[in-house]
Image (cartoon, rainbow, N blue to C red):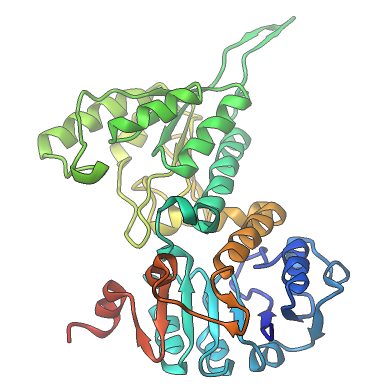
Amino acid sequence: MSVTIALIRETQPGERRVALDPGAVQRLIDRGVEVVMERGAGEQARYPDSDYAPSRFVDRPEEALAEADILVKIHPPTPEEAAALREGALYVGFTEHHREPERIIAMRDAGVSGLSFELVPRISRAQAMDALSSQATITGYKGAIIAAEHSGRLFPMLTTAAGTIRPAQVVVIGAGVAGLQAIATARRIGAQVQAYDIRPDAREQVESLGARLIDTGIDATGEGGYARELTDEEKQKQAEVLAERLARSDAVICTAGVPGRPAPKIVPATMVEGMKVGSVIVDLVAEGGGNCELTQPGQTIEHSGVIIAGPTNVPSLAAVHASEMYGRNLLKLLEPVLGDDGVSLDFSDEVLDACVLTHAGAIRHEPTRKAIEGET
């Protein structure tokens, strides 16, 4: 196999992860792939160059890009990086196509094929390729830890000579991957946890982790297992139930987000003002605008005595394990790409057909094409 993969330093502010950890690089090299790496690419994730010893090192990213058949990154290539790639090269990683359209345009114009983690289909075969879920797992874990750090209360119940400390009351909004991990982590450190999700079928997963699903008395199940649009009356009823639970909580962890769309506003300012002084909100979807109306991305503020944290790029807070998990996702996604004769994109493969965003000078993903190029 004659394939060269480029691994370069991430330049996004605050990014500490690296797309391939040393173990993933070694597995690629064992398959006969050459890895050319910018010096220091793994340092922010605490991987020194010596850990990548079998790789070939270059001093400048342009040197790696110029000879790469495949570029792997966390964030999509900048226009300058895309222009430095050879026509027909492949990029594999997050594409952030809803937030970074200029980078998608640059890949299209440079003739770079873009393989997007955001577009990996939710099927059994692709579970090991699902970087959204692996990174959301870390986000949920860290969210619970951040809530405990900001809280003036201890999370577990403690019986001491100075009396008994009651466990903290935590509400987790959203029972997706990040929400379930936040529930599990908050429970492990001793909190009593309730979860809020408009999908009744989330109950089983929530209760399996020892938490309780807040019952609003509304069934929002729609076609295909997705939530249907609520009526104004149902929205009001849900808001009243949630406000009552938040008023009694010590910490709220917000995780409800939809990739490519602004995060739904679930916690308005009036709801925050009804919470206890000293309680905490950790909004893990701050980059999408936040579930809380008052969230300020990247900042921790206080409103009416309530601490509101809006951390961004949370997986970077656990860069070692985040990079390891991301590297495993990458290896799985690369498996159908690395053929005996080099790089191969077989569009009869349902995974590749779904997640190749750009190819041969065109944007293949129709919603993204329409958003960028308009109707044709």
